[in-house]
Image (cartoon, rainbow, N blue to C red):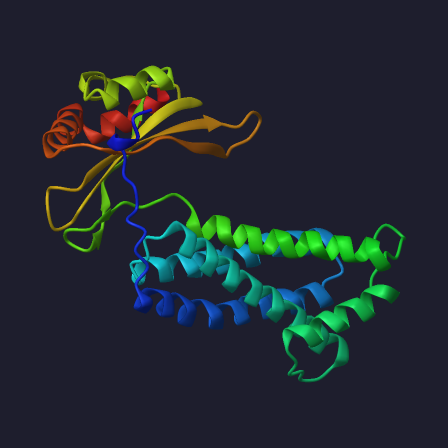
Length: 283
């Protein structure tokens, strides 16, 4: 793979952007984590609590991602650090709400005091599952897995799939053409052709019949203010067996392309007809 043909973030992390993300993320994490903690205490169904971990972590990550976009943070390491911090705040808030529900009153204690409470309560055990009441290291391990799930999911959602940034105009790129269906083809050969600036195959395949259960999609993002920042991503879409939902994975992205390629793709989409392209999924 030719790395020079792809977008790479500048690594810029403006102080204002960091503060914006923190100011947005921390209050939201308290609300999200607090809600999860209260639900975890009062809810008797372990499966709902497990789902709650992912929802809480995902919600914290979503808020962080919004903060990163608003603050124009283009540093992967800073994005990870901010998501980790906000995720930990959400975790702290969840335990704070949990113990407030348990003790039946308002509780103002720091993280170290919360840790002491966790250790003390965990030694005795607080709930049962399948007739057993885990305590000690067994319960600590369960809680550790829950904590890791919340924080890691927050990071995954916050960082997510990269959005190219136009450094010249100081603007995030936006989708010009989204998820154009393409017949599936061998990824490495397709990648090599695109890197060699051979776009004929890409343009020609737009509008051709595709397998709705397994195909590729093309997405183009451009700068809203100039014609210099244009990027192409190819995703692979697979419909899960015996399921209605699908799995989408980024295979090629974000490839730097020029304005002429964008115009060729748009012309092909227009000439093929957008409705006809959608119908090609069912052929």
